[in-house]
Length: 372
Image (cartoon, rainbow, N blue to C red; front, side, top):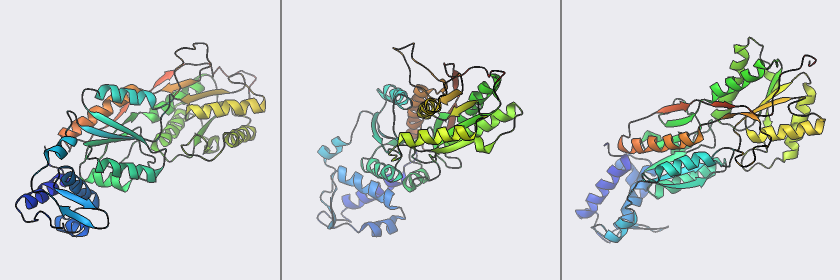
């Protein structure tokens, strides 16, 4: 197994302390000096120093410096970081019964005998995501599972860890061109399948409503929507894709009513649209309320399909949208296995997508011949 860079720095500093080159009671060189000496980043150095601290070699005092306090490991300190299984950190933007809860179940149940997992939420905040990554580094986790807040802005810490071949697995996103393992649904294929379903029912003017979230998942669904048009040799109208929904995003300050009004206006502007694809379940709920405002009903006046849907195990009579179901549990299982494999083989990078499944519901019907 290849030794990680922070481990090499740790080993060299530990040897210097044990051999008396940095005597007990002396002050360690500054972080800038150590970074220059070992030609490493601050992330790498901090992780090495954190290991030395946990093993009882050094003491770090804010605004004072780092001091050597022992030239042999403290058994008490070492025990605090010894686990029977590796410790993993997991960052989710958010999770609920629509998406995330089942994924976490797969992750936690599968890892039960293989790893310890700490789960934290970033709520889509890139700064908070960065803070959590730093927390995990200081905790000396063996690997990180992450559902990034953005696909367009990649965390500097994440990039730094990737460059060091630190075990990482990205969930529900595709970070193209980066040496980071990932596991997600095939969202492009899902977009194509769900759009073709509406064409098969005779709909010719199909719209799509999505959020402003900067994630690759939504971009892939839009691409699938476009491919669905190509499959039926139907012209794609870019103005049929409405991308301004904000209330569904974590930490949004935009009201639900504002987005309902936006959707209603979109439908009034395009009266020829007879079907809509919603890129997530909560947007489908907003569409339903917009239809109520306009005196329309689903599916009589408008067919609606969406991605993801909470399971109605105990209410089989509940209204259900025709939707794309992701293999969330399997994604969680595979994410853990990918990370465990990287701990053993840091050079291993895998990018995998799982096939989606179309679930029939109550929200679509064939286009009536009288419809425009």
